[in-house]
Length: 372
Image (cartoon, rainbow, N blue to C red; front, side, top):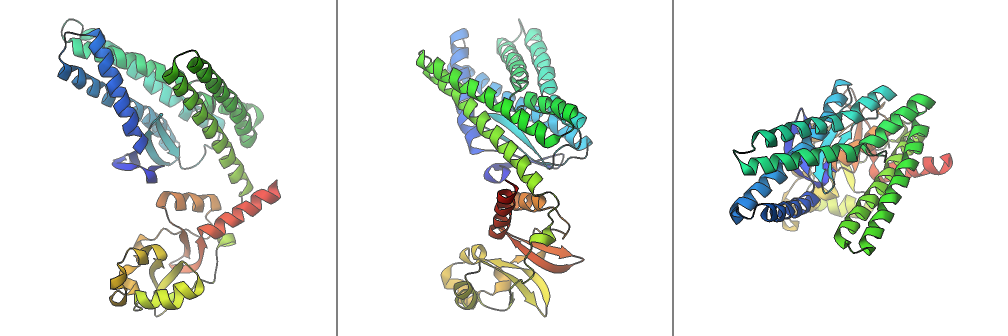
């Protein structure tokens, strides 16, 4: 998801970004708050209504970010990397680099976010109380943020996987059964049930006259349903690929081209004739980098005769590569995070092979079919 988002920076080394959908909900939330504040405080000026509305919206999303950082802090303490934190239409998501190794770790990571939200609810509630009689704007802001953070904590504790409550439920089932995959399936089924309740409730509310509210609740249900199915499929995929390493799926026969070749010659003699989309760039047998169709197309056609492969390639230092013992699930995650279609397999500086996305997906499909 971070690859499809606007990068804001890093916190504790974790890439933080906002999805395009965040801007939609930010505008809608700000307009809604401004309307509420105008109704509750008609004596405020329109400018003040908008100012408090915007500040409140920003602090709400800062609260969501802190909620996700709560998950991340515990995960990092348990030596579980966080691939990214992304704010989007439904709030935020911290993407774990790997699954927890035991139920207690899962429980601790899952419960950390709601605990942060409860603490924020208390803090903002105190700010609202202390501001009473001195600043009506701060009082209103603090009271609203106190209520919404408590609501955020309670909503996330619903046992609808992959919400925090669903992950707490999975941790409990995992501890009871000792089977992570089975616990995920059970939690996923419960999560789907909760999602269907949201969808049916939303439709009922919409038919009752509250169209926007009903559709929003149904949309949340649809999101939870999709997320539950996706998480269960991911665990099933990892289980199917367990034990499969990069060396098992790599292609040892890696075509290469000399670094001094022009892009025109590369296109004419290699890309068009072989149908391959990726070539290694070498000189005197030494690997320099990788050239793909994407890099070629980034160069204007008129410059191809005067541009060498070396000038257009992705240099070795910038390549995403894996060791031969890397798990296939790690390779797939690397491709997604880096938005790359080919990953070299390297050991002690020596190229052993290449893993292409298309080939890897065919391998995954075959394993899933025979597993079924």
